[in-house]
Image (cartoon, rainbow, N blue to C red):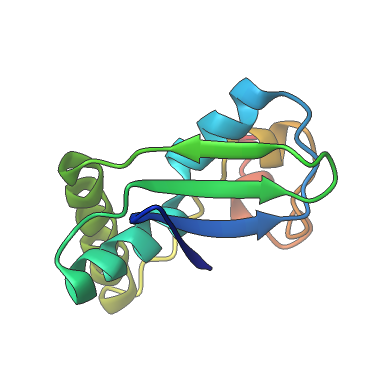
Length: 120
């Protein structure tokens, strides 16, 4: 969702995951590839970076807020290039996040080659 308040643009996404601390909510927002992609698309269309991105966590009611920079968006472009190169090369190596494997919250553990290699 895109909100404009007093001329400032916020790109907002909603999450059902349970985040209980504001610091954690802000950190997840800053690291969100999904929000960075939305901000990149906004920049391409409107010629400017949105003033902020936000994650609204529905369970706790917390809002994570971050400001993205040109450098953040350049890093996002690099991630897109890396992913697309991997797809073209048919390289689908698992790159699980720390919490998904360590805390056993990933829904794909029964079929994940990363788990079978004992790297979690």
